[in-house]
Length: 247
View 1 (cartoon, rainbow, N blue to C red):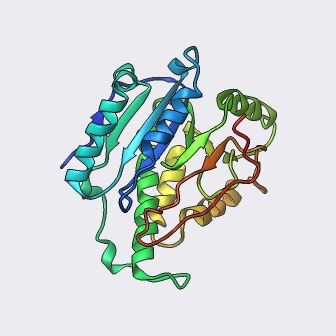
View 2 (view 1 turned 120 degrees about the vertical axis):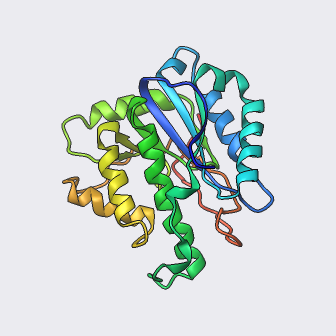
């Protein structure tokens, strides 16, 4: 594949939620994540948001099959523009076999987190034109009721504070919200330093560089991690945000 696979129509509005997704061993959580988002987004709010499903696996057959499955399940919402299904071109990625090991990580983990940084950078660039704000989650989370109203309220509460991102979950890269005008800077930072550090460390470095002294965290969390099987082979992920209330 030499170009972007896109099953969507463009939408402008308040918020884009990016959902990077890659193949896991014998399990998927993606449909449950999309269903949670749709069910917690009222009909009046749907024209204001878009959910970008970013299928990043290098296996072309898997990507096509997953795109078909997601489209079949959420056809109405893909056709309306609420859900977009996207795949970045393979040529956008380097050879991950020749990276320097850091933090005592195995070569497999270094390749996994380095590719993840590029996945995030490309997803942000793709999502840049659709809305005023961009928020990223993982493909194995659920969302609380009134999540959109809570996001709007916290943006207003932080209006007089300097911020690169606002956090709506304490876990990793789940629930980080950016102004869309900042996405180019964030993605460039990730592309330049993709093989240096994991994404959560990189974004913390950039936060400090951009003049946000401390993380601004909304509580209780509006996203909860539900997946057990990680996209990194043989890794079990038992993370939970203890402040989350589904409400």
